[in-house]
Structure formats: structure tokens, C-alpha cells
Length: 67
Image (cartoon, rainbow, N blue to C red; front, side, top):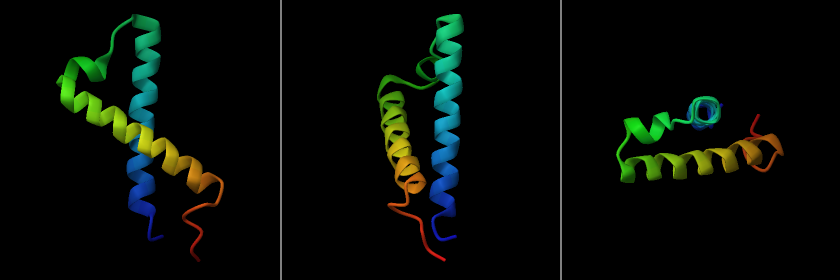
């Protein structure tokens, strides 16, 4: 329960990045890159990477196993 906010944020970022990847593959346009400036989009993708690490760590029981 303590990590619920981190899990929610990580899931949100991963969903947005996944949708962006799908749109990029189908329509050959990067929505995140178009909406956000260069530095901010780089920070966004860095957060997506951290979210993926967090999701994997949560999935495999490395973090988030509090009762």
C-alpha cells in the first residue's frame, strides 16, 4: 500500500510511452516529442525507463512486498 502512488505513476508513464510507441510505429510521428520540448521529452523518457525498472522490480518481488 505504501508504494501505491509510485506504482500508479509508473503504470501511467508506461501506458503513455506504450501508446506513443504504437502511434509512432503506425503513423510515423512521435507525439511525446512533438508535445514536449527536447529537454523535457528526454526527462520524460528517463522517467519511463525508471518506471520500467520499478515495474520489473515490483513484478519479481524485489520491492513492494509489504503486508
